[in-house]
Image (cartoon, rainbow, N blue to C red; front, side):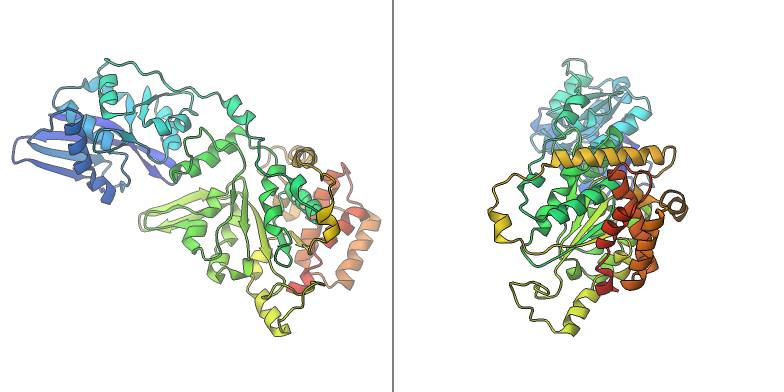
Length: 508
């Protein structure tokens, strides 16, 4: 007898439906899984056999063949355990075949029949809803994220017996419903706040400008000046995630199994990989490509601390995602594209010992060592960073000051206003902030006033700034003008923007 159960496989951050065909035939007892299964799928036969027996069901002493179709798509993971087990029970005549056709079924089985979590529940639920299917049977730990898709019934099944009895109509299980408004109501709650940072007011201002225009940032300063502390608080002043952004971000986290039972990733991600990370770990890869840290930071902040310590080949692979806001990985199994719309924040010491220019510590580095250390930062990567800011040591008077600094909520209000101006400016186009402006947009929206243009010309000449710095200054000045609700870029806006490029002389 033949039974077919619908399941699903992940391809990038999308999902496609898989037919789990189970055939029971006469012959020597044998259990075979075909259809390009990888290791965890092949091992499912042992888990399924034990789960069926320990749940009180008969395992047929016959030839069992399982085909995962389409057979040309590689199958990975343990999510096929539950559909295979139910397919075997259907071939024995214990389940109505018509009940199986309307549901996508997923879940890893423990040996005692409990259903364990799987990866990618959200994209799978979306794929099932697009096919017009009635429901989705998933482990309880995945029910919340799958329930975000409101056009399909999500049924949590704690055990194999629960799934079996539900499909027979013997046990009603209420579908999971998610109130998206309550999920987003908690999205403004952060564990950290800018009011906790003592001093560094000019750095806070630079990060406010960066958040308002979506600009990448490089912070340079001695150890212990608060670079990491400031970077971790940047997501608290970024605009709140929209529903579309939250769903897209959650899809990436879902395929990596990082949702942790939450319906949505409702706050902007902050990822801080160690400098020993590989290029595959940063942008994604593997025999079957998976997202990397860049994609996990989608719609959030990617923080690269100790930037010169990253390997050069690792930094070079950042060029495509920063330019195209997507990362494409090609393998023999095909090409996969992952979203990578990030704000890059990098931090570096001024030299190898970290104390160049620090009035309280003596630098032990020779000039050649300083130059070699700075040369380790990828030039093409620095080309894509709009704001370079020095972070000096905090003085005792500032540390001991009991005055409460400005909160993240107050700063975010100004950022939201500036982003609103930019959204109106670029309405109808795939540009959402000033950092994404093209050369044509620069000519149209970034024309400085007469005095501002004179100031910019003097700065270019006297400071020896490059043509690249000229473009960055105009973009940042446009953002500063937006924060001031100014139509025209004035000399004050240009002057502040120039401050954020003064390090060009040291690095180029």
